[in-house]
Length: 161
Image 1: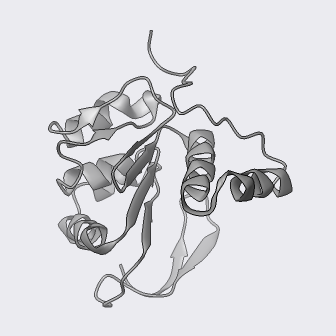
Image 2: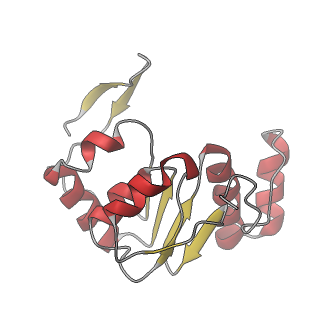
Image 3: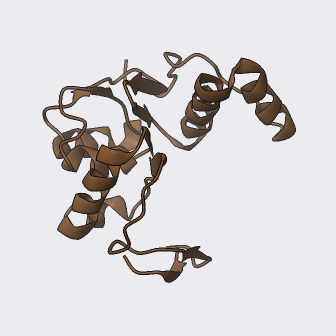
């Protein structure tokens, strides 16, 4: 919420260049998931900030349970979205007006990109790079990262049958 070091739940720190009170505009907003989302969905200050920044961003992407935070803003209402299957019921409860897709690796609906889990988030990100910069660039990024890119957004082996 404020600039400075941010300690993750496993311990390593990141560094926030700005805080929620800083007037910063982002072209792309990425809302990560993880265990902290269960606490932060009730943090009105963070949820409001995500909503305001999402309104201005050209692209809004979520990974895993980050979709719960975006859903709480109301910005996903009426849009298709997906999330991690292990937390699916909890995330869906955070946004009952979202058109949740139980079988999807990732979803693009307008400026909103949502992915189911961490590796699906990598696949979604490469899809987003392809969308913005072309398939060749996305393939080059995957190759340099030694990552096998699953290009099929509908391929979801973790979905409930």
